[in-house]
Image (cartoon, rainbow, N blue to C red; front, side, top):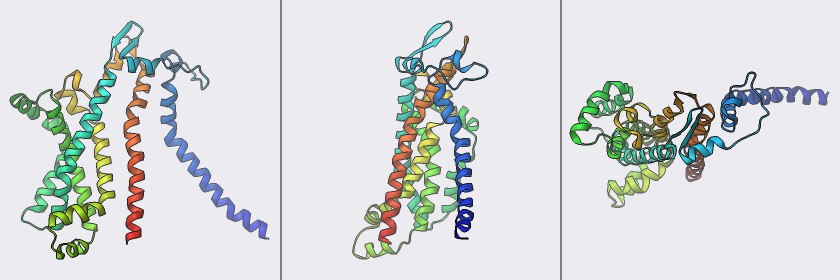
Length: 289
């Protein structure tokens, strides 16, 4: 009888594990397939039916790192590593600027009540609602007048308009969930509200700020339209530079797969680092509580 109970209890556990494996296969299979494609030539990729067994090659990665796109008609110059560096620069700088502006603004919206405060916050959030094509024409005209066209400064300014509303609203909700009593007690000791903000509020809101910064970085990294119109080839990010893989002689699937693998490595590394930092921050807060 005891054995039958153990078997009956173990069956749901087995079914849950089996369902979890199926879900992981469903979501991870495209990533694994792209990773395998990055080590194949176009001929191997386009074989029907596809073969799981093949001789791997580093030709695609060598082409990206060397900057020579290999096609059936010959080789073309491809500044992929420059595009990758542009993406890192634009995303990191725009997120840093957005955090510098957005975290104090989020704290002000969460802790102080002032006239038109909600309207201003909603107006900032509406920047996320507006389609990029709606503002591209006036932006391009203004950039030409101000001398910001085809500059890193101009692109960073546009990218922070993407990141700022996201950071503002996520961090604001996190500040609102924190009790202000600790800050009030700190200010009673004679400290200014700025010191209470930097010494108390920001450390307590650290996990929320990290999550908002990570999401904003991913949104900035994946942006395509603004850089396509407002930047030339030497300042375009990797999302726009990937258009070079579509050539007159065909689509270079192997090099596209290798470019995808290389382009997700920075965001993956940042996500893993932020996840570790988030867990540490949340566990520290639980101990303090």
